[in-house]
Image 1 (cartoon, rainbow, N blue to C red):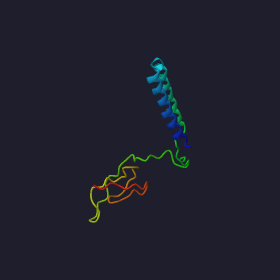
Image 2: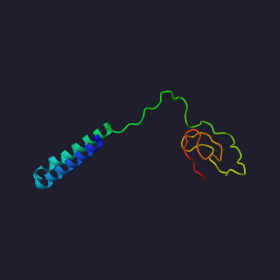
Image 3: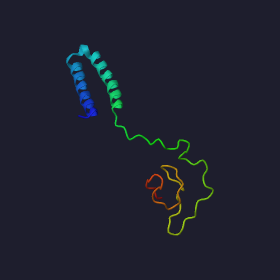
Image 4: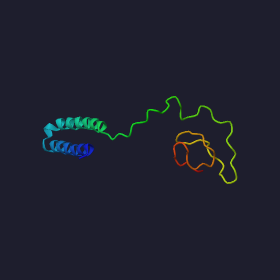
Amino acid sequence: MNGRVFLSIAGLVVIGIAFYIIFEYPGYATYAFYLLILWMVTNFVLLYAIRPRGAPLPSNTAAATSPFPSTAPATLPAATGSEPAGGLGFCIYCATPIPPGTRACPACGHALPRW
């Protein structure tokens, strides 16, 4: 069984026990409240500890390069008759300079908005 599923089921059980104590034994309602607070904190810590992790990033990426260009090109290439005018001149996802009319970013592969 997945650890996150187990924690979710255990959380429902703890909440059920706390409500049972609150309604059946009102004298122990304070302890039930502290039980709920303790379980919430513990559950968040455990869910964070067993969260799914993605593949590690490759270590050969250059840390000195920025995805955002420090200077913009002076002029953008003029649009031809077959290409729509009004492109941004860069990818909105990774800031790679691109010519107007490009449908997908050559660097990151995102489809670029057309307006």
